[in-house]
Image (cartoon, rainbow, N blue to C red):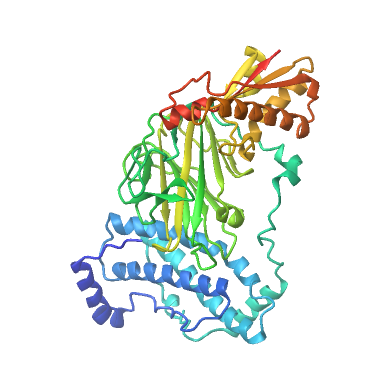
Length: 518
């Protein structure tokens, strides 16, 4: 996070601390950061991050004590700090559960430090809110809050009993499961990508080391090659935005992309987050009058919440919430993110799990025309975040009605592994809708036709398109129990393009599956 220090502020702060503070006690006595570590990584990280945020808020409280007004940059820093404080406070119960099973001495030391960190968080949240509202008041009782005394046995005993009675941490990462073992769960995945492609970027046309040609930023980022594929590496920082060249989003649209991380571990900050903004402008800010923000947690030492907030008509929004989630294992294993906006409704999936479904998140229609990405609180050069295959499409249309009304549909939303007929799991929302049509009208027979782009030979593409159509047919039979006699499959390779095979967007349009009712 970037801080703004001016000479005048430094002079005033020094003057305040040397002369004013001892006389008027205008700033609360500082809580001292513990000098030693406990040796439990989650506890040590929680204490360190709590006091990092506390020091930041305490510094701005010093400005107020000296009578120095906050400028716009100061307010921005405080607002972000307040959000980080809320995230960290939510993790406290999970951190307490990590103390269980440790030695008596280690439990005692951990409890003392957690108590001190919680006291620092309590001060920080209260003070940050008052500073932002211009209502900071220092009361005499705050002067009594000297936590240098490692304090109050009653508090410690209370928290210790909390430890002994709290439930076992149910946020532990579950063992990985093969997707094929959960076909019943998979069959309920209901994301349906839009059917009219607006933007696609797999960075295949960009050079390694360059900033991608179809994006803009006020910071930095570059294309890197990982195992033969180009990925866009985002840079962490306060106020940095990455903006794809997308304008005039429709009322109904979908967003999909893949994420990749490197260097995350149990020391990764609880405030390390990946933000997706829908915004009313292309400038390097969240938005002027209207925006939404959904952020994914990347911290690994606890299960941190997905956070959602909206802001409309300059007056704020009705929604600011933290959604219980544990996506730590997903974040480490190249997750696919899917977002669907249907008029006012906003939904978000991480892989096949839907975490966000808010019916009236978009309070004002047709004003959020742009997409922006932002990451912060990652260690520079150590903790890295990459994005690939950003796809934005109009629609998210109900394919069931279209198939019944028109007798055929074509979609590029059924995705396969490169050069393979292996269906990617995020495609099952579409296949599920097709199955519902067949279940509703048992007289329908369906022809499934695969199409490819022009990469590779004609012979290989014909073979690939047929095997992909057959894979979709088998999914309808095995996952959704459709009678095989009602389905036939075929493939036409690259012979019927609908887009320009010289561009990533055109290739994405040509890789499609067609369904024709017989």
